[in-house]
Length: 410
Image (cartoon, rainbow, N blue to C red; front, side, top):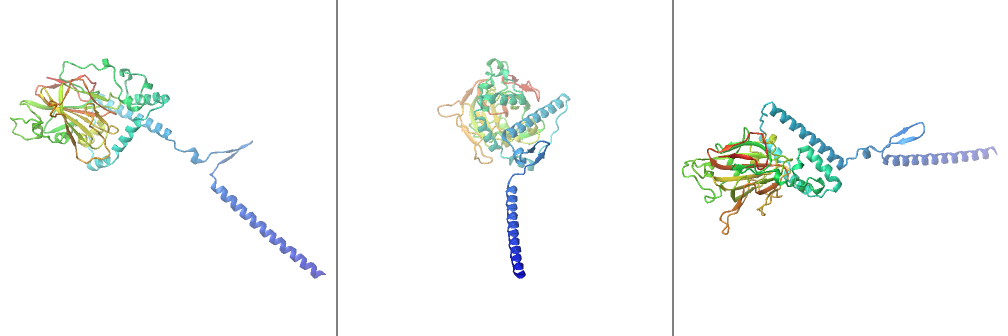
């Protein structure tokens, strides 16, 4: 009897141990599943208060980068930087201190040119064409006006809601009376801007800013033919500069005008002349602001540009529109075949187009002050022309000038 009782107790003990093992393994598996589930969930932080338990959002959700916030932050930072740089330059000019020149090395220029500024400029051009909602136009344009000091009182349409996109705002027209054309001087400013440099061309070198030069031949390109440019019979020197001077006793002059982003973006004819030839140089689209012009030698020769050449009453005359970052689009009103900032181009190449044909022997006549072309943003205009030795500029380096004001006269 006792033996049977011992067997029954042993069997009961074995069954209880088996059940205990099963329960333990089931609880272990359940805890593992819970751990896996909890591991997959985002890490919430929990704070305990006297009354209730508070949960915070995941860190990833809290610090998610939003494009609008990024654009506002970068735009505000750039606006502040622009005002600080402008303030520094104004202070140096007031003290009469020249900004020191420090030229970039070849590797620095190569590194800068490796930046896809042409692609960025095309993207900027497409962004300019996007129509803004009516409620967003005033804040966006007001930020631009504040950053670059735009005078909207001169605009033909002052209402900011009128401009559907940035492109229309950049190409806004002015009131007719805001830019009277000077009739008493032979050459006027073709645009609003800042005078970077002016004077005579010497040794076939032109100053983009004081102390920094570029090659005249590299900038304009080689002469097309002896029919387009007459040679001076009295000159024994076969230099490119002497080839451009067509009359004995004349000199070659130049003037560089920088258009800031806040300036009026259209440019006009600076005198009465005839345009006979257009040469388009595809190239880089580096910034052409005065700081970069003091840093990179032959900056204007690197950048994309459109050279218009012809003649006026004193001989050779040329106007060159130089492109810049976000200014890949250069438009000449009478030249529908011109397409700038194309995706593919050959380095060092250029495209020629002659306005003189069998039916048109004189080219394109332009009157002083007549609309000539436009930029999509600020850039540079370079005038190179022939004139008698008694031609005088009525300018000072660094001065602000507006379209229609006098550059110089005889």
